[in-house]
Amino acid sequence: MELSVVIPIYNEEANIGELHRRLTALLAPMALPGGYELIFVNDGSRDRSLPLLLELSERDPAHVRYLSFSRNFGHQIAVTAGLDRAEGAAVVIIDADLQDPPELIPALYAKLHEGYEVVYARRRSRQGESAAKRFTAKAFYRILRAMTHVEIPVDTGDFRIISRKVVLALRQMPEQNKFLRGQISWIGYRQTFLEYDRAERAGGVTGYTYSKMLRFALDGITAFSDVPLKVATVGGFAVSGVAFLVMLYTLYSRFFTHQYEPGWPSLMVSILFLGGVQLIAVGVIGEYLARLGANVRQRPLYIVSEGNLPAPAPGTTGA
Image (cartoon, rainbow, N blue to C red; front, side):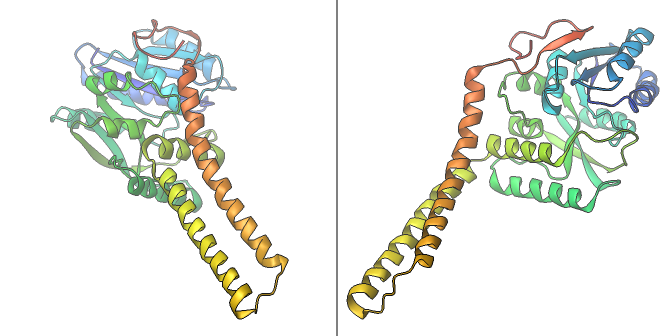
Protein backbone atom coordinates (compact mmCIF):
# COMPACT_ATOMS: atom_id res chain seq x y z
CA MET A 1 0.00 0.00 0.00
CA GLU A 2 1.46 3.34 -1.05
CA LEU A 3 -0.85 5.83 0.68
CA SER A 4 -3.25 5.68 3.63
CA VAL A 5 -5.61 8.54 4.48
CA VAL A 6 -6.78 8.57 8.11
CA ILE A 7 -10.06 10.44 8.71
CA PRO A 8 -11.57 10.77 12.21
CA ILE A 9 -15.37 11.02 12.09
CA TYR A 10 -17.67 12.54 14.71
CA ASN A 11 -21.17 13.54 13.55
CA GLU A 12 -20.04 14.28 9.99
CA GLU A 13 -22.97 12.89 7.99
CA ALA A 14 -23.17 16.16 6.03
CA ASN A 15 -19.58 15.87 4.77
CA ILE A 16 -18.69 12.18 4.38
CA GLY A 17 -20.06 11.74 0.86
CA GLU A 18 -18.46 14.90 -0.51
CA LEU A 19 -15.14 14.10 1.18
CA HIS A 20 -15.07 10.63 -0.37
CA ARG A 21 -15.90 12.04 -3.80
CA ARG A 22 -13.12 14.64 -3.64
CA LEU A 23 -10.54 12.19 -2.28
CA THR A 24 -11.38 9.63 -4.97
CA ALA A 25 -11.18 12.26 -7.71
CA LEU A 26 -7.72 13.22 -6.46
CA LEU A 27 -6.12 9.89 -5.61
CA ALA A 28 -7.40 7.66 -8.42
CA PRO A 29 -5.57 9.58 -11.21
CA MET A 30 -2.32 9.58 -9.22
CA ALA A 31 -1.73 5.90 -10.13
CA LEU A 32 -0.08 5.19 -6.79
CA PRO A 33 2.01 1.98 -6.77
CA GLY A 34 0.18 -0.44 -4.49
CA GLY A 35 -2.88 1.78 -4.42
CA TYR A 36 -4.41 3.76 -1.58
CA GLU A 37 -6.82 3.27 1.29
CA LEU A 38 -9.24 5.60 3.07
CA ILE A 39 -9.51 4.78 6.78
CA PHE A 40 -12.61 6.33 8.37
CA VAL A 41 -12.68 6.09 12.17
CA ASN A 42 -16.17 6.64 13.61
CA ASP A 43 -15.64 8.14 17.06
CA GLY A 44 -19.03 7.34 18.59
CA SER A 45 -21.07 9.52 16.21
CA ARG A 46 -24.74 10.03 17.10
CA ASP A 47 -25.94 10.88 13.60
CA ARG A 48 -25.98 8.77 10.41
CA SER A 49 -22.20 8.77 9.99
CA LEU A 50 -21.84 5.02 10.59
CA PRO A 51 -24.57 3.94 8.12
CA LEU A 52 -23.00 6.22 5.52
CA LEU A 53 -19.61 4.61 6.11
CA LEU A 54 -21.17 1.18 5.67
CA GLU A 55 -22.66 2.29 2.35
CA LEU A 56 -19.32 3.67 1.20
CA SER A 57 -17.52 0.45 2.11
CA GLU A 58 -20.02 -1.50 -0.02
CA ARG A 59 -19.75 0.90 -2.99
CA ASP A 60 -15.97 1.23 -2.85
CA PRO A 61 -14.68 -1.93 -1.12
CA ALA A 62 -11.24 -1.63 -2.72
CA HIS A 63 -10.43 1.60 -0.92
CA VAL A 64 -12.81 2.33 1.96
CA ARG A 65 -11.88 0.96 5.37
CA TYR A 66 -13.74 1.86 8.54
CA LEU A 67 -13.63 1.39 12.29
CA SER A 68 -16.39 2.25 14.72
CA PHE A 69 -15.70 2.85 18.42
CA SER A 70 -17.93 1.61 21.22
CA ARG A 71 -18.27 5.25 22.37
CA ASN A 72 -16.70 8.65 21.87
CA PHE A 73 -13.00 8.44 22.80
CA GLY A 74 -11.84 11.74 21.32
CA HIS A 75 -10.32 13.12 18.13
CA GLN A 76 -6.69 12.28 18.92
CA ILE A 77 -7.56 8.71 19.90
CA ALA A 78 -9.52 8.27 16.65
CA VAL A 79 -6.50 9.40 14.64
CA THR A 80 -4.30 7.04 16.67
CA ALA A 81 -6.60 4.09 15.86
CA GLY A 82 -6.30 4.90 12.17
CA LEU A 83 -2.52 5.07 12.41
CA ASP A 84 -2.51 1.71 14.20
CA ARG A 85 -4.24 0.11 11.19
CA ALA A 86 -2.68 2.12 8.35
CA GLU A 87 -0.63 0.05 5.92
CA GLY A 88 0.59 2.83 3.63
CA ALA A 89 4.20 3.79 3.04
CA ALA A 90 2.91 7.32 3.63
CA VAL A 91 -0.07 8.38 5.75
CA VAL A 92 -2.20 11.52 5.46
CA ILE A 93 -4.18 12.78 8.46
CA ILE A 94 -7.16 14.95 7.56
CA ASP A 95 -10.44 15.91 9.24
CA ALA A 96 -13.80 15.26 7.59
CA ASP A 97 -15.20 18.80 7.86
CA LEU A 98 -13.53 19.87 4.57
CA GLN A 99 -11.92 22.89 6.21
CA ASP A 100 -8.59 21.31 5.26
CA PRO A 101 -8.66 20.93 1.45
CA PRO A 102 -8.06 17.38 0.18
CA GLU A 103 -6.71 19.01 -2.99
CA LEU A 104 -3.50 19.78 -1.07
CA ILE A 105 -2.68 16.07 -0.67
CA PRO A 106 -0.83 15.65 -4.01
CA ALA A 107 1.42 18.60 -3.12
CA LEU A 108 2.07 17.15 0.35
CA TYR A 109 2.84 13.76 -1.20
CA ALA A 110 5.25 15.30 -3.72
CA LYS A 111 6.98 17.31 -0.99
CA LEU A 112 7.40 14.19 1.17
CA HIS A 113 9.35 12.54 -1.64
CA GLU A 114 11.86 15.36 -1.68
CA GLY A 115 13.52 13.68 1.29
CA TYR A 116 11.24 14.64 4.19
CA GLU A 117 9.56 12.39 6.74
CA VAL A 118 6.84 14.90 7.75
CA VAL A 119 5.14 17.61 5.71
CA TYR A 120 2.53 19.54 7.67
CA ALA A 121 0.03 22.06 6.35
CA ARG A 122 0.36 25.51 7.92
CA ARG A 123 -2.67 27.78 7.95
CA ARG A 124 -2.25 31.12 6.23
CA SER A 125 -5.81 32.17 7.10
CA ARG A 126 -8.80 30.65 8.93
CA GLN A 127 -12.21 31.36 7.41
CA GLY A 128 -15.51 30.92 9.22
CA GLU A 129 -14.04 31.00 12.73
CA SER A 130 -14.76 33.57 15.41
CA ALA A 131 -12.17 36.11 16.44
CA ALA A 132 -12.10 34.56 19.92
CA LYS A 133 -11.26 31.10 18.55
CA ARG A 134 -8.55 32.47 16.26
CA PHE A 135 -7.03 34.45 19.11
CA THR A 136 -7.07 31.59 21.63
CA ALA A 137 -5.60 29.14 19.08
CA LYS A 138 -2.81 31.53 18.13
CA ALA A 139 -2.05 32.34 21.78
CA PHE A 140 -2.01 28.67 22.82
CA TYR A 141 0.50 27.53 20.21
CA ARG A 142 2.84 30.42 20.92
CA ILE A 143 2.66 29.89 24.69
CA LEU A 144 3.24 26.16 24.25
CA ARG A 145 6.20 26.81 21.97
CA ALA A 146 7.71 29.15 24.56
CA MET A 147 7.19 26.64 27.38
CA THR A 148 8.65 23.51 25.81
CA HIS A 149 11.98 22.51 24.33
CA VAL A 150 10.18 20.67 21.50
CA GLU A 151 9.83 22.75 18.33
CA ILE A 152 6.07 22.48 17.80
CA PRO A 153 5.06 24.44 14.68
CA VAL A 154 2.54 27.24 15.15
CA ASP A 155 -0.66 27.75 13.13
CA THR A 156 -0.91 24.05 12.27
CA GLY A 157 -3.41 21.30 13.05
CA ASP A 158 -3.21 17.59 12.42
CA PHE A 159 -3.50 17.94 8.62
CA ARG A 160 -0.20 16.53 7.36
CA ILE A 161 1.50 13.62 5.64
CA ILE A 162 3.96 11.40 7.49
CA SER A 163 6.21 8.55 6.42
CA ARG A 164 6.00 4.94 7.53
CA LYS A 165 9.02 5.55 9.74
CA VAL A 166 7.11 8.19 11.74
CA VAL A 167 4.01 5.98 11.99
CA LEU A 168 6.07 3.16 13.51
CA ALA A 169 7.62 5.60 15.98
CA LEU A 170 4.17 6.87 17.03
CA ARG A 171 3.07 3.30 17.74
CA GLN A 172 5.79 3.14 20.39
CA MET A 173 4.27 6.08 22.30
CA PRO A 174 1.40 4.61 24.33
CA GLU A 175 0.48 7.58 26.56
CA GLN A 176 -3.24 7.99 27.20
CA ASN A 177 -3.46 11.77 26.77
CA LYS A 178 -2.54 12.09 23.12
CA PHE A 179 -1.18 15.28 21.55
CA LEU A 180 -0.13 13.97 18.15
CA ARG A 181 1.24 17.16 16.63
CA GLY A 182 3.56 17.47 19.63
CA GLN A 183 4.55 13.80 19.45
CA ILE A 184 5.37 14.07 15.75
CA SER A 185 7.54 17.12 16.44
CA TRP A 186 9.26 15.28 19.31
CA ILE A 187 10.11 12.32 17.04
CA GLY A 188 12.23 14.57 14.85
CA TYR A 189 13.53 13.66 11.35
CA ARG A 190 13.37 16.14 8.49
CA GLN A 191 10.14 18.12 8.59
CA THR A 192 8.80 20.94 6.46
CA PHE A 193 5.48 22.63 5.64
CA LEU A 194 3.17 23.91 2.93
CA GLU A 195 0.93 26.92 3.48
CA TYR A 196 -2.77 27.00 2.65
CA ASP A 197 -5.95 28.95 3.38
CA ARG A 198 -8.28 27.07 5.67
CA ALA A 199 -11.87 27.10 4.44
CA GLU A 200 -15.10 27.38 6.39
CA ARG A 201 -16.69 24.13 7.61
CA ALA A 202 -18.67 22.61 4.73
CA GLY A 203 -21.54 21.31 6.85
CA GLY A 204 -22.52 20.18 10.30
CA VAL A 205 -21.36 21.59 13.62
CA THR A 206 -17.86 21.40 15.04
CA GLY A 207 -17.30 18.90 17.84
CA TYR A 208 -14.50 20.99 19.32
CA THR A 209 -16.23 22.98 22.05
CA TYR A 210 -14.27 25.38 24.23
CA SER A 211 -14.19 22.81 27.06
CA LYS A 212 -12.66 20.21 24.70
CA MET A 213 -10.18 22.80 23.46
CA LEU A 214 -9.18 23.52 27.07
CA ARG A 215 -8.65 19.81 27.79
CA PHE A 216 -6.67 19.50 24.57
CA ALA A 217 -4.50 22.46 25.62
CA LEU A 218 -3.86 20.86 29.02
CA ASP A 219 -2.85 17.61 27.32
CA GLY A 220 -0.40 19.45 25.12
CA ILE A 221 1.15 21.45 27.96
CA THR A 222 1.45 18.61 30.44
CA ALA A 223 2.75 16.19 27.79
CA PHE A 224 5.61 18.37 26.57
CA SER A 225 6.40 20.90 29.28
CA ASP A 226 7.24 20.87 32.97
CA VAL A 227 7.17 24.66 33.17
CA PRO A 228 3.89 24.70 35.18
CA LEU A 229 5.58 22.60 37.87
CA LYS A 230 8.54 24.96 37.92
CA VAL A 231 6.21 27.96 38.12
CA ALA A 232 4.40 26.36 41.06
CA THR A 233 7.72 25.72 42.83
CA VAL A 234 9.14 29.19 42.19
CA GLY A 235 5.80 30.77 43.08
CA GLY A 236 5.75 28.88 46.36
CA PHE A 237 9.23 30.15 47.28
CA ALA A 238 8.31 33.71 46.22
CA VAL A 239 5.13 33.76 48.29
CA SER A 240 6.96 32.26 51.25
CA GLY A 241 9.58 35.00 50.91
CA VAL A 242 6.95 37.73 50.83
CA ALA A 243 5.18 36.17 53.82
CA PHE A 244 8.49 36.11 55.75
CA LEU A 245 9.09 39.80 54.99
CA VAL A 246 5.56 40.67 56.11
CA MET A 247 6.19 38.74 59.32
CA LEU A 248 9.38 40.72 59.98
CA TYR A 249 7.57 43.99 59.29
CA THR A 250 4.77 43.01 61.68
CA LEU A 251 7.23 42.18 64.46
CA TYR A 252 9.11 45.42 63.87
CA SER A 253 5.90 47.47 64.02
CA ARG A 254 4.72 45.66 67.14
CA PHE A 255 7.87 45.85 69.26
CA PHE A 256 9.77 48.90 67.96
CA THR A 257 7.50 51.53 66.42
CA HIS A 258 4.42 50.51 68.43
CA GLN A 259 2.23 51.55 65.49
CA TYR A 260 0.82 48.12 64.96
CA GLU A 261 -2.96 48.04 64.69
CA PRO A 262 -4.33 44.51 64.70
CA GLY A 263 -7.17 43.89 62.28
CA TRP A 264 -8.80 41.13 60.34
CA PRO A 265 -8.38 42.63 56.80
CA SER A 266 -4.64 42.02 56.63
CA LEU A 267 -5.08 38.60 58.20
CA MET A 268 -7.78 37.56 55.73
CA VAL A 269 -5.84 38.87 52.73
CA SER A 270 -2.77 36.91 53.79
CA ILE A 271 -4.69 33.71 54.38
CA LEU A 272 -6.62 33.91 51.11
CA PHE A 273 -3.51 34.80 49.11
CA LEU A 274 -1.43 31.98 50.55
CA GLY A 275 -4.34 29.55 50.27
CA GLY A 276 -4.92 30.48 46.64
CA VAL A 277 -1.27 29.94 45.71
CA GLN A 278 -1.26 26.58 47.46
CA LEU A 279 -4.42 25.43 45.68
CA ILE A 280 -3.02 26.44 42.30
CA ALA A 281 0.21 24.55 43.01
CA VAL A 282 -1.71 21.46 44.18
CA GLY A 283 -3.93 21.65 41.08
CA VAL A 284 -0.94 21.79 38.72
CA ILE A 285 0.68 18.83 40.44
CA GLY A 286 -2.64 16.99 40.36
CA GLU A 287 -2.89 17.38 36.57
CA TYR A 288 0.46 15.65 36.13
CA LEU A 289 -0.37 12.93 38.66
CA ALA A 290 -3.71 12.24 36.95
CA ARG A 291 -1.93 11.66 33.66
CA LEU A 292 0.62 9.40 35.32
CA GLY A 293 -2.23 7.42 36.88
CA ALA A 294 -3.98 7.02 33.52
CA ASN A 295 -0.81 5.60 31.98
CA VAL A 296 -0.11 3.28 34.92
CA ARG A 297 -3.58 1.71 34.62
CA GLN A 298 -2.73 0.72 31.02
CA ARG A 299 -6.31 0.60 29.83
CA PRO A 300 -6.75 0.34 26.04
CA LEU A 301 -6.89 3.72 24.33
CA TYR A 302 -10.06 2.74 22.49
CA ILE A 303 -12.47 -0.15 21.97
CA VAL A 304 -13.63 -1.04 18.46
CA SER A 305 -17.21 -2.27 18.17
CA GLU A 306 -17.09 -3.05 14.44
CA GLY A 307 -15.09 -2.48 11.27
CA ASN A 308 -13.68 -4.03 8.12
CA LEU A 309 -10.02 -3.74 9.10
CA PRO A 310 -7.79 -6.47 10.56
CA ALA A 311 -6.60 -6.37 14.15
CA PRO A 312 -3.97 -3.73 14.95
CA ALA A 313 -0.29 -4.47 14.71
CA PRO A 314 1.44 -5.85 17.84
CA GLY A 315 2.42 -3.14 20.30
CA THR A 316 -0.57 -0.87 19.66
CA THR A 317 -2.94 0.07 22.49
CA GLY A 318 -6.45 -0.42 21.13
CA ALA A 319 -8.90 -3.22 21.73
